[in-house]
Image 1 (spheres, rainbow, N blue to C red):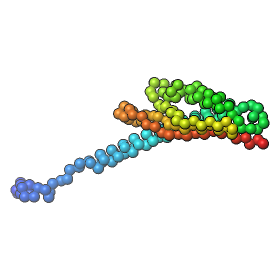
Image 2 (image 1 turned 180 degrees about the vertical axis):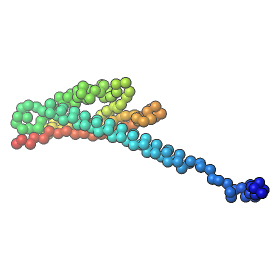
Image 3 (image 1 turned 180 degrees about the horizontal axis):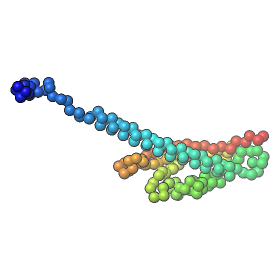
Image 4 (image 1 turned 135 degrees about the vertical axis):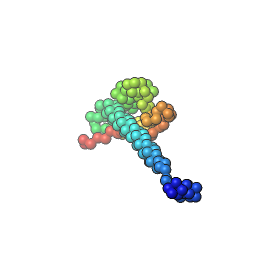
Length: 168
């Protein structure tokens, strides 16, 4: 009797009594979406930390160059006058000597891998009142898919330093 009923069920209505198979599409899709979110987060973190680091270093370079380029006699007389040639020289010196960039303003890690390049598009130096502004781009490569996507991308930056006297 058991065989007969099974045989009838198989022949008569197979689609109605089949057990659904676990396809796992939803689970695989969830893992894939999590991977994409993780990838985007890691890339954003890399871009953000590199930009913040460069912004801080360029700002420090500008502040130091403005301080060192202030003319002594004007400093004593409480005027804000700067030697623009010296300011530009000190700024470039800081980028190369203190930030560890090469002559093309490129930074490499200890293994010789490219980290970033600072491309200065515009420099505005004002003698009086002393003001130094630099704007440009930070060129970098992706960190998580460096071997798959060797392309570079640019992130803009702009920093400014001015000497303001408050001791009058």
